[in-house]
Length: 199
Image (cartoon, rainbow, N blue to C red; front, side):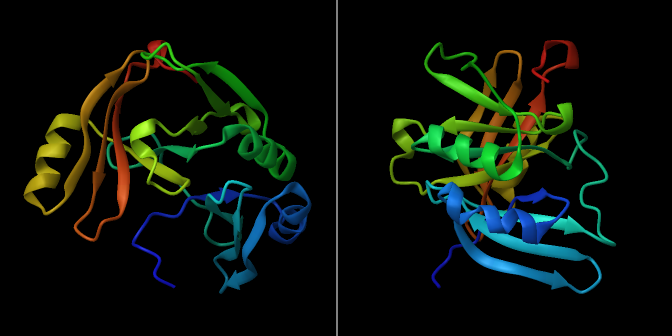
């Protein structure tokens, strides 16, 4: 299928089949129908109206992340799309996830949409910047790190590439985007102290 290496983001749901049935009417597409993964759980793959693909996961024995926001653990998921409104409406309709807009910190240009399931905060939706024009819409993943600059330096020695050198986002943290030797991209972030961070 000529799909390049990439990270998949899976969203926890109580009933994969019920959520999947909502997808076509909400403007999305069923990429892969619900299926059992042995006794680990039940999964499906869907895409939003802008073409960004995410997974759905109904947990059985495998509950998903047990650790977050510590070095090496997933800390954030971010939908990058050229058309945020239909993507946000889709997520709200299909998943029932409240959305909250906020100004783009550090840029003064545009808005960022937070997804707040069950009053937690681990995801957002952002309009792609002009330099991302050739990049397909996708849901990216960030890993928490103790030192973004050190991790980027180490990644270079291990055959990785840097998409964006470390930069600071006020109130959020220090961020970089990398690719592994196969070309799969991911973000790393040294989060700002909790009292200064969103969520």
